[in-house]
Image 1 (tube, rainbow, N blue to C red):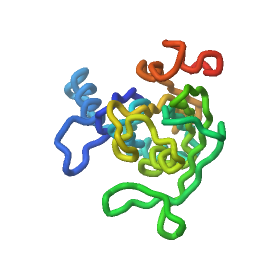
Image 2 (image 1 turned 90 degrees about the horizontal axis):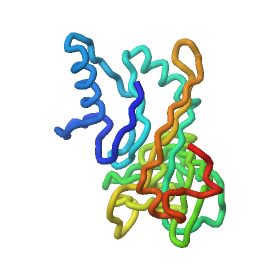
Image 3 (image 1 turned 180 degrees about the horizontal axis):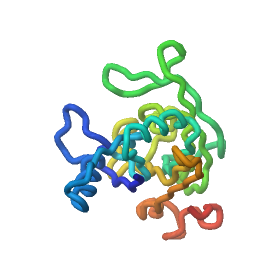
Image 4 (image 1 turned 135 degrees about the vertical axis):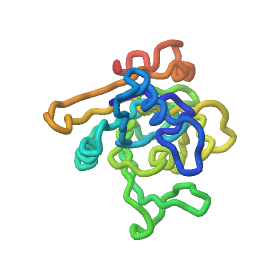
Length: 216
């Protein structure tokens, strides 16, 4: 099952959380349609609470395991608005990430103390103070995109965790995912619309990227 998760919603319940999650809301939705149905849904991957976009759940543990075995081959694309203009219009950010005592992720020089993370980006549009990036996750580590862009000197707009003096919504959206069906090997692709507030950072209003922005 594929959904378009809204911002501010946890993907799945943590031990210390009691609030609603995308996982629980989806289970309730399935049960509402058929109270006798077995609403066993398994988390295939997660999005940060503040991140919106495409989220995949499996209807059985077997399907989840199939996804896990091919996850590195799954194409996961995001859109992000960052502060400033990047000198290099495309590239790959690579580092080893580790979690500190403050639960913040950061890059470390010693490979033995971190996990390899790779983030590919392309600048799709920019204005005086902001840039719109299309991002492809080459690995999937915790807070990877947010950490890499922050350490690059271009933190994501609205990132309260990895930037300073931020307010409002995090401008990070998982807009596309492509994978092969776990059993029949058919290629499947799911996309979501660009959040409307993204257009507020670029002119003309209502056109993100104008002629430079491909159609999503």
